[in-house]
Image 1 (cartoon, rainbow, N blue to C red):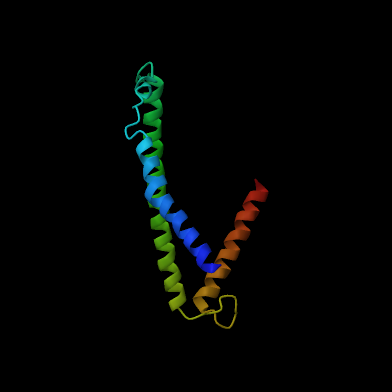
Image 2 (image 1 turned 45 degrees about the vertical axis):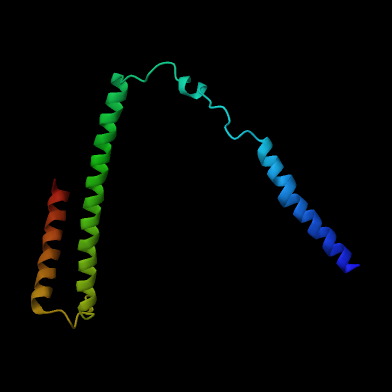
Length: 126
């Protein structure tokens, strides 16, 4: 039974590949006609109108502005990255602790406090 199925399958495959498939290729037209109507679909050429020229110039200006903003942001990013690296290299020092402040820092804060109070008094008097 298995031999019979095998031979039948073999005969069908031989028929398909050696007779049916080459015969189908011969029947199909090897050179289909070329389509020429696609060349004539545009009726009028596109003219450079003043609006188009204005939009192109605006587009170029926007692109230049965009590029300058990107460059500015990139430089700012690199500056911030260098600042971060510098801050990471420094040891952590508490800034609000009274014991670590030097005399010049306390003198500066006292001067700033008095200056702020005097400015507030001047604003109130006006």
